[in-house]
Length: 117
Image (cartoon, rainbow, N blue to C red):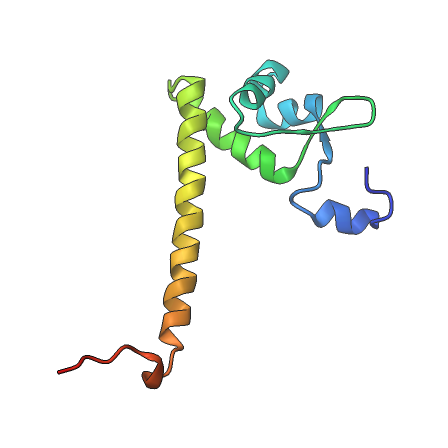
């Protein structure tokens, strides 16, 4: 993995693949097969260790937990994965729109478009 980065920094990183499949499944209260199904649906793509074992990050576990909530409510796994992907895309679009609104609010009056009257 990334031995050149101090352990404390790696553990604080939401994207660092710190959890084995077994540990991730136990934390989520699910089975390794469920995590494999999420990978097959391309919801999460775990990093592979040098030995080929799947490793999951905290961010991926949060995504998997959201999918599990939906599946537990009766949503088919493929639909749950699609819903989580769309929720993530919506959140990102809202973040980008908020940034545009903030930057538009910082424009000076001279930089706005003026009508020809």
